[in-house]
Structures are given as structure tokens and as C-alpha cells.
Image (cartoon, rainbow, N blue to C red; front, side, top):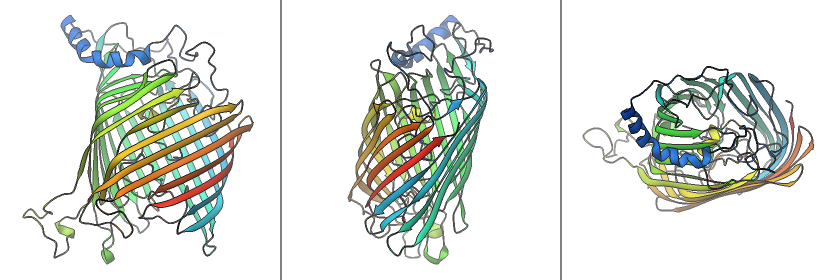
Length: 528
């Protein structure tokens, strides 16, 4: 449905070495006084069968789940120190809140569209009220109905909200413009189910998206219903048959309304929610999304067309420990993308069609999906790259480190009528160069071929079928804490792509691949 990253994008966190702190207990250690899950007793034969079926994931997670006698908040290695500060402050064992705000002085340019300069104020907040889930009682093996276990141990209501605006002046004509974006979500996270309500306006396109559809002028309201696991197996920390269904209603500037639908299903999932070394492993992870395509037919206005993406990971691993500081992530499976195409109701009179009233052939892209990464953490806290499946489920603190990943790449272009397939290399890093000074950087290089174009065609200037496409983005950032809670940052980026980000990049959207550049100087404050 949408990128699994946060709506802000950017890839570089704010503040000092800790990128995020859980809005709850410092260590997420379960309260022994809380009621534990009562597993149903099973026979010896059933126990042997379950043990055999789960042996693979249990062995995979053994390296990441092995711990010493210290509590979850202790350093994994003697002499390691956690980063001293964070951008959120836990207030109590049952609630927490964070609020940060800042302003960027921005200069950006696009070849053929002139340069822009302006101010970009922003605000981010998060709040949580509820309780912390206790670990299931693993002393007696058993099979439970509806899993109480997730990587995020918080239960109750979690609310996140953020907004940013860009007031800019352009060098061509001196025209002034104002763009803004906003995002909000409210999640009711209970033991058997997770309910989420969400809202966004002008969400930026990310390199991790499967469909690069522009969200310029689009307001999205939707929700998500999830069952973390129909069954849970103890003591192996296995969830069986996880299911999530999501839907979004999109409102366009011209007044039309469309829908996006999505389904995610995981057959077997192993996890370890240690604050220091979170681990996730899944077998058969399926994501299906049907999304509205931004197609217009002359005076008739929008035509109700949709693009389909299917992603099936046969095996997905994240956070598997290779050593005390190095971990591995990998996934492999099949990806299918079906670009938007015309049906009989919208076909021109001269277009051929089959007896069933549909075009003779439906364009589609199918390819193997393989991606692997190595992650290095430089403190006791984990470093989680933006592309990792842990990025959306780990609620604990994050520290500095570095990561590099490589694998296949596939996407639907911004119109939804063309499919691109190739490979990619991505890297992220964040290191301390002094006590209160951090340097960070990220880079992505994509080389792909446009393998299919549907009967809708592509706009003038866009790559044609058979063309090779090179897209890249390189960003660097330096930040230092002036006083506790007040941080100054300087950053710069160079990018070549056709993705749209009204507030981050400024300027009009483009169907062609164009170089862009930008630099910012920021001042940010954490209120609490």
C-alpha cells in the first residue's frame, strides 16, 4: 500500500546518537506480576511434531535470542555505552510523550526548472498510554489461540502526528509558492488485534515504494486491521497465520475519489524483541496491493484504473547475529507488478479487444526478488536501516552504526503504466565524531530496464520500453547538540530520479529523470 518507512523519509534521524526511544518502560522488561499466557497442554506426539516444524526458525533466531543474565537494558558487551540522549523522554511505566520541532533554511534546484530557496518549518510528535505486555510463560510448551506477542511490547493507544511546510521563492520569474504535507496515525494495539487509523496529505515517494505514484495534491484517509497471529507456539516465540487488511480513500485536487486496498499475510513468524538485538524471521510473507493509477483521458477527466503489485517473500530474515556487533538480513521470493491498462468500457473505438471485452493481453512484470544486507552497530543499541523489515516494528532506542545492502529492484513508474526491473545498492551510516557531534550519510543507486509499457503509454520525456534507467540519491548530514534538546544540522543531497516530493524537493513533478540538488541548515528542539 505504501512505503514501510515513516512519512518524513530522508533516511537520517534527528538529534544525537539515539534515533528513537520507546514511549514506555526503559527496558521493556515484562512485569512478573502481570498475568501470563496459559498455554493449552498437548500430547507428546503433538509436541514432537511442533518441535520438528519449528526447528528451522528456532535455530535461525538462536544467535539473536541468546542473552546473558543481565536485564534487557544492560549493555551486550562490557565497556559498551549507550548513547546519552534521545529525542523522546519516557514519562512513566504506562504512558509517554515526545514533541520535537524545527525549521530548515533550504536551497534546492532542478535542471530545467531553476533554483529555489525558502524556509521549511516542521513538527513531529508521538504519544502512548496503556501498558506493557508480559512475556508468555515459556516453561510449559503449548499452542495458544491468538498471539499476544509482537516486536512492539506496548499495548494501548499510540498516536503519531507530524507536519511540514515549505515557503519558497523560485529563481525563474520570482514566483512564490507554499507547499505543505501532514501525516497522522492512531493505533489501538491490543493483545489479539491491532487497529490503526491514518491520514496523510502529499506523502513523499520513497525509493522503497513499489509504485512511485505522486501524492501531490492527494489527501488519503484509511485504516488497517491486523491479527498478529492466529496461533502462537511456545516456547519457540512463533506466530502462525498473521493477517492484515488495509484500505485508503484518496481525494484528489480535482474532487475525484479513489480507493487503495491491500492484504498482508505471514504463515510463520519468529521474533525476539530484545532492545539490543531485535530479530525477525518469516516464512511465506505475502503482500498484495491494488492502487489507483493517476490516468486522465482528455476532457473525460479521470478514468478508474488501478495497478496491482504482489510481493511474496518465501524467506525473510532481519537482525540475525553474526557477531556481537554484526548482523545479517536477507529475503528472497517473487515479485509481480501489473501496470494499469484499459478495459472495454474505456477503450478507443479503434482499439482491438477480445471476445470477453478486455484487451488480448494484460502487461505484467514477474521477477525473482532477492535482497541482502549487513548491519554494524557501534554501541549496545541496534542500528536499523530504513529498508529493513524491523524499521516499522521496533519501538526501542536506536544507536549509531552502518549498513549496506544489495539486491534486485522493481517498480511501477509514476503513471502506473510502465514497469521497471533491475538491481540496486543501498548504504546508510551514522557515526560519532565527537561527544556531541554526529555525521551521517545515505546512498542509493538503481540500474533498471523499462521492460513493459501498457496500452496507456507514457508521457513525453519518460523512458520508453527497452530503455535503461539510472536513478541515484546521495545525502550527507552533520549534526551537533548545542545544548540538551537543541540540535543544529547541516545537510546536502544530490539526486537523479522522477520521484515526487513537494516539500522535500520543491518544484513541479517531472515525467523524465532529472538531476536535483539541495542543501539545508536546520535548527531543531526537543520540547519533551
